[in-house]
Image 1 (cartoon, one colour):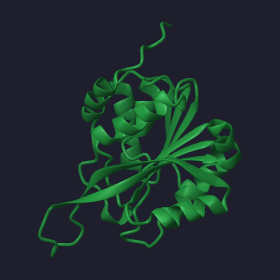
Image 2 (cartoon, rainbow, N blue to C red; image 1 turned 90 degrees about the horizontal axis):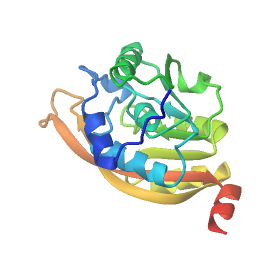
Image 3 (cartoon, rainbow, N blue to C red; image 1 turned 90 degrees about the vertical axis):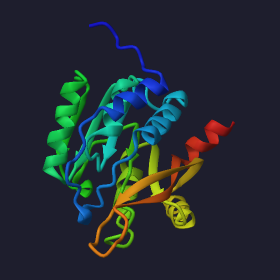
Image 4 (cartoon, rainbow, N blue to C red; image 1 turned 120 degrees about the vertical axis):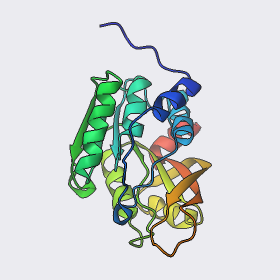
Length: 214
């Protein structure tokens, strides 16, 4: 089979914009879709840093598969997406079929139950609007199964996130900024959507960071 040529960043963004999304996101799961432009920026940064091509990727809390599918398009050896919502996983499979990708897998599973080891994790975990520190189980799982992590968090929590990473022996090498639209959760909220500033961290194990910096 002929090797698929990696897309440009703009081509990747356009492709991700074409994917089917959840029609009715569940507020209790904080299912905030990562905008295609932001996902493409993160994925292409990872691609240029050598974190995607020929690597095994996990997308924790994958939703409709944006990061897993984007990584597969950029040359990942294999991309695995997991989510607790069966409807999201069904849509992920449909998106994979639409893109004619055969190097992706999707499962319905709690993040705490995922056991496979990978090279790199991508994740946009819950921000903790419904449950305080709901992102912590995602971080702890990523720390235990991978060597590099790209993770999105609500801005303002940088110290907490980096301190937790340091406690587990990880260090941030890059921090990016972006915006995510969060849907209205309660009826009394006036606006249908609210734009929230986010911080995107690239974490590596401390020994890896020392090698990268040498």
